[in-house]
Length: 179
Image (cartoon, rainbow, N blue to C red; front, side, top):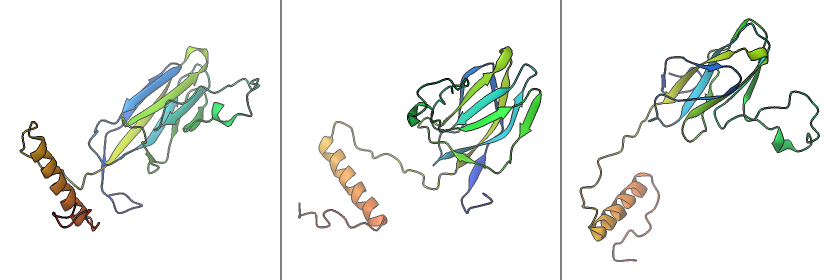
């Protein structure tokens, strides 16, 4: 049970992702959920140099311009990253607040990590996923043969009417004779 809300979640085991400078991603191990969230547990850096890490549940983070010499600073989209930016000193592990969760908005439920490390070092991010439990389980598929287009359309129309009525939305034609 979530501490801040009244919805049930399935919290999964931690995963470690990372290595030398590059782009990484990890998909949520459970795909059948209403939505997924991730939490950063820890970020660790080796002994080679300072590491810059970007973590996003939306898309691959862009590599930032660390020199400050870019002439294209005024265009906002060039340097916009929908990500968490983390800077880790040499030989350090940074623990994070365990109850900070971020929604995974990627359609394939992937979390992307961009790691930039100096001097050929490596850095690692420990993530944990949680999934919102399904509360509605879909029923069995209709038993109409796919070649019976008319019967399939009648079944689809009836299912749509029932769904609208259950949701409290007035049907588009309550009387079957009115078209």
